[in-house]
Amino acid sequence: MTARLVVLVSGSGTTLQALLDASADPAWGASVVAVGADRAGTLGEKRARDLDIPTFVLPLADFEDRLDWDAALTELVAAHDPTLIVLAGFMKLVGSAFLERFEGRTLNTHPALSPSFPGMHGPREALAYGVKVTGCTLFVVDQGIDTGAIVAQAAVPVLDDDTEDTLHERIKTAERAMLVDAIGRMAREGFSTNGRKVTIP
Ligand code: GAR
Image 1 (cartoon, rainbow, N blue to C red):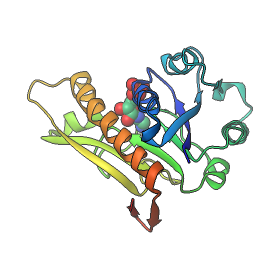
Image 2: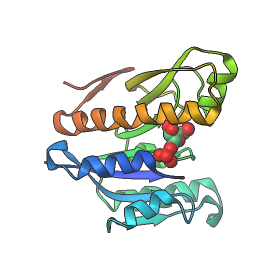
Image 3: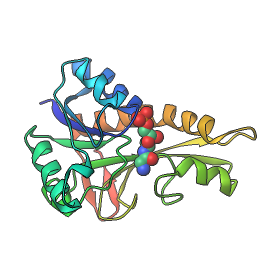
Image 4: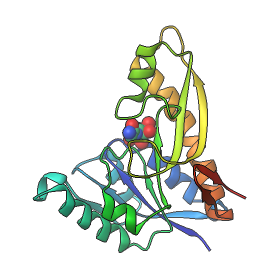
């Protein structure tokens, strides 16, 4: 059975695009059934609309507080009956209602090798620290910031003349390949999480 992916985005959505491209092949095992954004006018949301994939936009500013926003987000995502939820450049933390409903099947991708450089500026902080290797991490979301159990990682070199942008672009190239590979395998073969250890059989 094809796994149903709901993907949440905040920006340009190149990561989403990799998942959309992979979805075109039924053998991949997963299909993007809806895309949500936390702000209007993202290229990510447009990429989905162009393919007639259902989208929704849910700005935090439209809600009294974060709890209400999180409850609304949970219901919108649940309406699409997802197998997995993928945060693909989604720059908001989901709350406990969301995590309770989708426990163990919300995935996030982060542009650093966890546990290094969590948060919003992984590439910038890797560059500032002077590491020679950084990368990306796909993990199962928990209550922390980029702390969940690790599904997959890929390493990329940091070059002497890198800027934050050139480094982030190199990471994103590796990140897209990592995501397509890992999510395809999770969709086709399933996965289990035991403490911090995620296994795809
Ligand atoms: C990706 O590098 C993703 O890891 C990062 O945003 C980029 C999204 O690019 N996410 C975070 O930093 C979350 N903390 P995209 O909009 O082109 O897919």
